[in-house]
Image 1 (cartoon, rainbow, N blue to C red):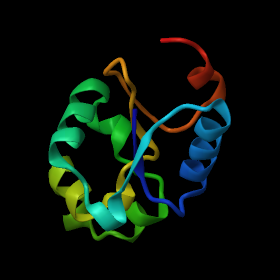
Image 2 (cartoon, rainbow, N blue to C red; image 1 turned 90 degrees about the vertical axis):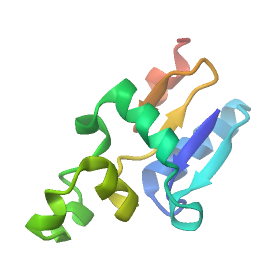
Image 3 (tube, rainbow, N blue to C red; image 1 turned 120 degrees about the vertical axis):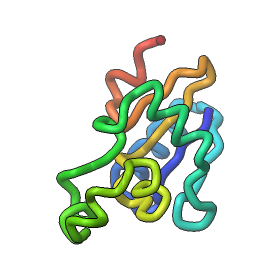
Length: 109
């Protein structure tokens, strides 16, 4: 399992704490330190769609100028990782999810 996000994000912290409490092994990929892997982003976008991945209600989005907001989603996410909804998770079965929902995560796939 791979969890992508920003370590100081409250939702990412809750998700990681939940995974730790469940004893689930995962690797954390820090966007701020390691960047956004294009192949993972493309795979997640293919599975979930860009509308699910790009947070257009967040502070980061609102601070961007119109030209930046109009960028192609992949380029925007690479340039401004904070616009990606978090956490982005690639589960062991290959599926992708975005966001944290303890009840949904507790149900088997």
